[in-house]
Image (cartoon, rainbow, N blue to C red; front, side, top):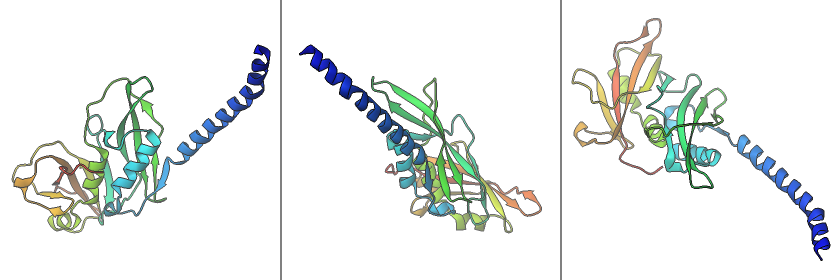
Length: 228
């Protein structure tokens, strides 16, 4: 009886192991392929935060609410045209967390790369962090802030006709009254007194033949809405 069991294990054990190995390779290949996904347009207003976050969660295995932008450890800056189109390739530094089978939480660094010429997003390979990073803003909130940035109001405040803008995440401080500033949420421009939790974006215009302008504009995006 024992001999027949051993023969049965030898007969079926190896094919099953091979099948599991092939399945694992296929799953890895599918995950690698899903690291590239299409953009819905090249303007900031075309960003689809919910769809982007779903793709990131699928690739990284992180919960959607646990995908953060690394705005504390790194400077996040983007270059767009005067019409707020993505001009050159750009990136978002991401911190994701995932629980292991043993109940431990591990943090990873990745980048969400933007390739406007190909109209594609690309998620880079992960780099495991040996420390627990400070939680910055959720990536979804950064994306919503860029999507709803009040383009027409910014164009009204600048001098002349900029050919491009540099946008960066600024420090979480209110400006003094001499600095142009705008407060807004997903529904549009709002009053300053009503804003509580916010992301500050610093916007610098670039003029053809003149370089960087001096009219720095601060825009504050309200992030009290927490759904992705």
